[in-house]
Image: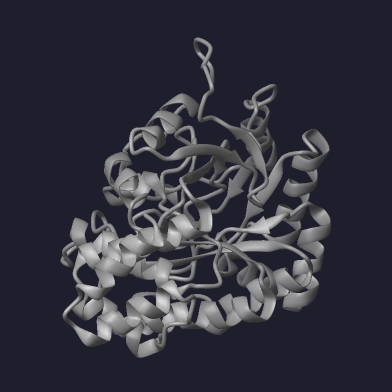
Length: 385
């Protein structure tokens, strides 16, 4: 969408405040907290979507990124009791869970020998017997076997517990992890920062301040990370904007975040199953407002295993320029919560076609958004990954 087209849409807007917000967007002026809330409350989906799409295209044109990755989930046994979680089993009921050894996890890595994956994503429950030293050994083993594989691993919830059990500071713990092979952090564990919500849905795990401190420390060590927000449960719009405001402030300071990923609450098999899920319109608005409010984040990602393929495709017109990776059916976190994707795996060809179907340009990236392959005119060989 060119600038004149979006100017016409803004000029036709009858709400003066929404018109002001639109003009701020196209002039690259920062939105205020109240303006962010107002977009959620008052903006129509077509209006906020048009603004977000203009912003997305001004940053990235039609490029849409994905990567070739797989997940390792060391355990679903957890000492914490997050009410929204359908994945973990409390340590008291660990017979219902799993716990992988270093050798078992290395075997998962070896399954991809000779395949063009670039990233392993490692997250799981917080198991009291899986220590910092255990995970340092795991990362050293992965790097020894495949040095070029980018290790994106461990939420601040996992790291805070590891560091506390090992009696090391955040700075020392992050240094040890980085030296052992940790290349970047995923965005999980953020949920909602505001204590009015966090104290209800996940009171016993790492605080918002601890989450932010660990990411800041990673950035100061030269690492990058992602950020998330869990939406569509008991939070209010002001809680979402408060969360994004804190991320925006840290990004101003460190410039270490790669991408922002809104995560939809799924209500199967957890302690919040009585809460209805967000509608499609509200999902799309969440992505659009994220793109507009987080002006210092280069990328906004839709995690397709959570949303489903069709909805992820729709988000590409609402500010999103990344739909994650091939996954290869190596994650259970959202399938256990009732997501649309019960076997989350797509081939490269499927991902590329999904992107092309909405007239976007598919670009394979590395974890840090280095371009690996432009697939816009690529011809696939039979049985290609």
